[in-house]
Image (cartoon, rainbow, N blue to C red; front, top):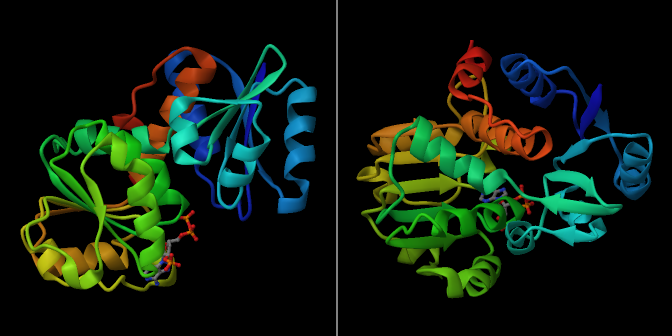
Length: 268
Ligand code: ATR
């Protein structure tokens, strides 16, 4: 039986084993998928041990995505731009890193929520690793523009510079934000602290979709704020989680699983 795992810290609440088991049942294969708590100092040894023992694929989650990137022998073009990896496998003795987070987000927005990114005016809040992982796949959808805003402006400016050659992206201060964004994505970790980024309500008032990369049992702080500001629809990151897992599953097993029923099952 093929063995997989997700490594991170904390890891107890990870839904990945459940998601991959549901995918496996769907396509009629048997697999073992575990979650493993790994401290930063153990990351390299744990990855080596996992693949030496015959493991087929590893998912990497917070806080190891950037450190795992640095350990890879080769990277997909997408992972290179993201500067982080969430999916690892071996190919001819080489450790290969992929990043499926951004594609997962785009699939959730376009396929599940049925909102087009094409020609959309987008705002991304936050300029950490999560933001960097989603920018290239979002730009590949040909939005009209992406504005990026962050508590620490210099980090937003740095990201805009990295991705400028791929599309219409710029960094703005909170004061400079527009009032007609279509899609507003919270990629900051503010909701983890039940906090809100300093985005004025006007930025969400004519929004079609406010998307929080975090997920929770009920609406996140950002989703509630967006609803109050007049944004038409709000979503948390559960769909993205399932979609990024589906992309990893397809890379490892050669089957593209169906995701909508899995998302519905997890929501119950
Ligand atoms: P990740 O890899 O999950 O993106 P990170 O690199 O620590 O995590 O980045 C977290 C992002 O959320 C950063 O953009 C951070 O802003 P700073 O760059 O100013 O630190 C942002 N962030 C975290 N807490 C926030 C809060 N309460 N309000 C606004 N932004 C917040």
